[in-house]
Length: 132
Image 1: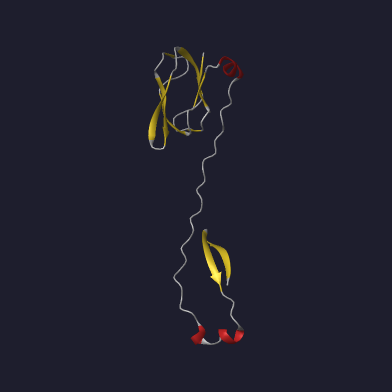
Image 2: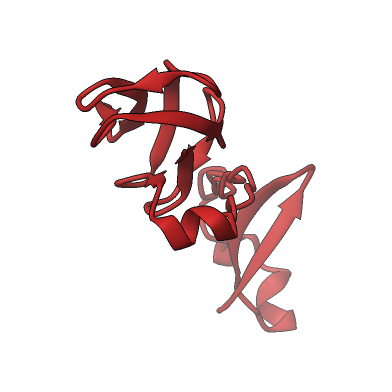
């Protein structure tokens, strides 16, 4: 018995083919009962491709950046460039594993640049905000 993977109209099927001798193929009594139709395999879903935000040189030197604490999706951005924030202010909301996590300011500062928008997919360590 040989196994094959066959694609028909975008659906993928695993099939097994049995090789039979010529004298047996002519005999109707030698036929096996029909198998149920194969179930199509699901194709892997494409994940959206995203680019990592590079850390600006001046921010990396001064340590005035806020990075994503974990991978997830930015569901809300609550600040914009030029705003002043104080310690404990919620800057944005990061959704990860069906939980909303607040990204907060660790001290008083002015927002230099917000690097992500709502709906952005981020990895742990990606730059979210640059502070002045």
